[in-house]
Length: 289
Image (cartoon, rainbow, N blue to C red; front, side, top):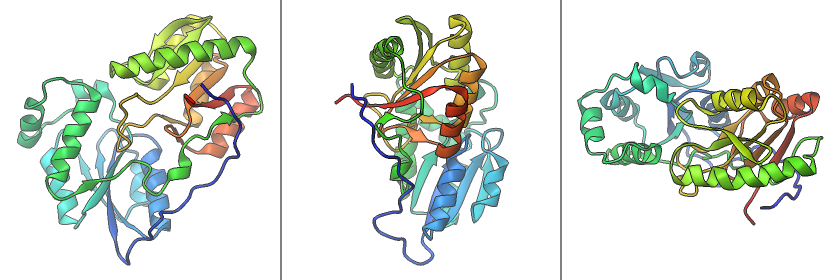
């Protein structure tokens, strides 16, 4: 596990610029990531065609993309038809879908039902890979979620003004190994630690609620550790943190956020670091080497 400071850098462009009028599809879930991606893709010269999910995707996305199609969760045939009608041959899958919505808001069409019936195990990785494979069978390549945004990934090192204390570092190391184990089980990506005790594990509720639950149990001084799964597919579901993460940590008096460098999305970096520095929360980027 390494903690070595490196300078923060800005967003970079793609190695190969797009051809004039080249399009990219955006299959959008919740959060800020789809908006950040769309803004950058437009700057790079892409036309962006989005498929957004009612009740999940931020309405503000409409102001950023060239075209947008709204669907319900599970309307898989409508999703593919929208991309094909817009002439899309490559797409990204960005932003989450709250797993709790799968119990109430899902509207599966016949194609989705057929796809899900072929799944032997209902785990995140398996579901997402099956969806990607189905989309690619229609000639639409699913690109990595950092497509054109390689430097939006968290760098290695101490990223905030405050450094973790020796005691906090012990909890980080402990949580780092535990997060790997829950990742192997495809349960979640985040654990909350206090005095080398796991007080919360992320499951269906998502990272923010796991932090709230763990922070309330720890009372104060909780350590939040978030890392990618060992079997992580870079096309989807990379860990992401942003200002909202710090707001939730401040709410429950958590003191350190440790995330995996090179495999975690840094949303609204400057705002997040400014908030962490004002509240005294330490942020570190970790690696295994």
